[in-house]
Image (cartoon, rainbow, N blue to C red; front, side):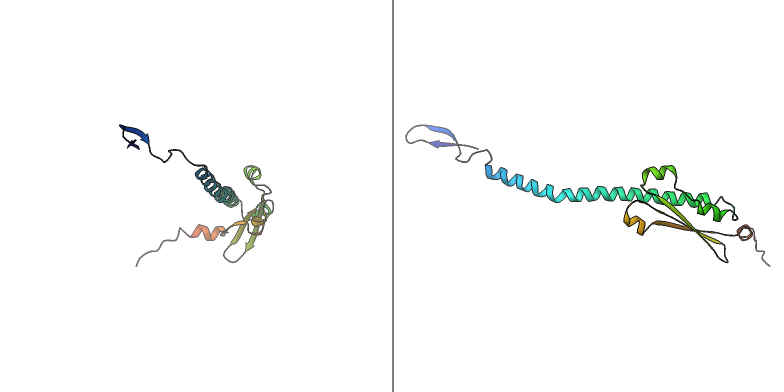
Length: 155
């Protein structure tokens, strides 16, 4: 903002206000200090967020793999189910994406049918301790065939 100031007896002269329009070195130092503080605070959060995204991607891949393994097992005859479960292997896609991926299957027989539990674990200690696990029931052929065919007649 420009001001007109009188200089003694002469005419009014155009002068700048006494305050400078530039920034001082103290303001620059404060700005860099604040910027450095924000970067120091946000960098670990960005790194943690990246790791969380990668972990979530790996979990989704593992869940898809276990689901696909159970779907493949549903096509196997009940007599061959035990031998196929013992030879479960991760797919090539999962082997390349998840380091050290291992698929483990477990078969339990009961009165209702057979319970199959498939789990997958990979690389890090956390996943080895708590693998992704899905379970499914495979009912006997006679029981599953009769479920939808019974019709009730009304008196």
